Image 1 (cartoon, rainbow, N blue to C red):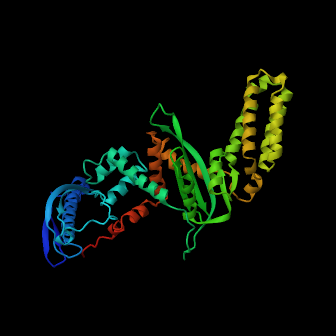
Image 2: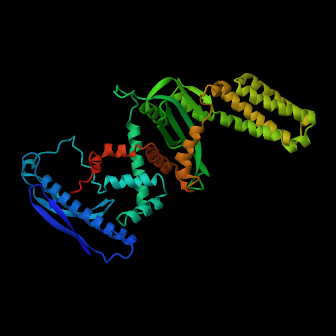
Image 3: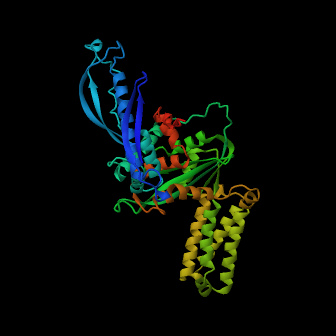
Amino acid sequence: MKFDLILAVDDGDGHVINISLGQVARPEVSDMATLGLSLAESKQLLAQLQHEVVVRQFEATTQQRRHCEHCGKKRAIKDFHGARFRSLFGDVDLRVPRLRKCQCAVGEPAPASVKPASRQRWVAPELEYVQSELAATLPYARSAEILHKLLPIGVGNGATTVRARTLRVGQRLESELATATVKPPGRRRAPRPRVTTVGLDGGYVRHCDSDEAHSFEIIAGRVMADDGSQRSVGFVRTVDQHSRTRVQQAVAEHGKTTDGLLVLTDGDSRLRYLQLSVLPEATHVLDWYHLTRRLTVLSNVVRSREAAQQLPSREHARISNWVDSIKWRLWHGRPVTAIARLDGLVNLLGRPSLAGRTVVARARKLAAGLRQYLENNAESLPDYGRRYRAGERISTAFVESAVNQIIDKRMSKSQQMRWSPQSAHLMLQVRIRVIDDRLRQDFERWYPGFAANDATLRISA
């Protein structure tokens, strides 16, 4: 059995040209698993179809552009140069003409306001979109490998090319943010959600240059609205110069800001400063998880077997009870008495009678650090018990999941890689667009004809 694939090209004037794309021969079927086209055949036919469509589209567009915009006369061709159009369905070599200047424009000086046209990039936006979307989820080499297995991608689209195009998309997103101004959203017919909670936290990835640092910090955040929708934020603190604008824009684009906006962080002073500069009217709450983690470490040291052996039983029981009372006071919204009890614990552990014991020195250091931590965040310690019983947020669990989704799954834990701060920052801008399902909207904004490719193919009956 043979199948001849014919492409019928209608130029719009009623003239139809039939072009043979290839012939598929099939022997008698002995196994139902061998029905249909193979992957290699489909890739070859798809590449041939793309070649014919691109070449004829390009020739038609070139003929239209040869006519002068002012007088309509057809301009002469000066010479040709080669170009390779890269797409998801193969590379196509084109002969690009250079046109002579029309006679009606000879001798006219070029306007001072006219700037030279930017160099044409012979890359299909859909190829950049798919490569960026895959690279934001998988390693660069793995992304290139998947595309090569499934589509007739050109040989030049390797891991390095995927990385360069993904970071170029991230740079374009970053440039838009640098020139954007945060404005209150205008009136819309559709009701917009109300932003209720903003969470910020940090994660670390390994630096590519071992001489610079072992790792660097990435800030990840999530903006939550009352309808359950969310918006992600991610940036490298040492590289980003627009962190304030980034967070403000995420909040402004996602919904209306409520009077009772809540911001949760782990108590980091720099995150607190960012919150005060971006959302000064918001209520800041110290994350209960990070707070209890410090208390748990102190409690484990105080209640350890080593402490029971080195401390008198009376003092050991007293110190253990004090640690429990500190946690109780913090849970019930009594930070002043909790800090006072910590002062008493530090003084108790500093007595000469307890000096020289290793467990005492370790416990005193942890207690002093916890006291400083509470003093720095004294205004952010609510009545956690009341908030918990009222069903309100007391922890950054949703931000921890954002850190895991934005950073860990792509840049550290699940895929061990080393990054430069600049590359990581640009990658983050693409990744959060993919997570929030907004990357396609960006490409539709950059390329007006991008959405036109989504038209459903009309199948002849």
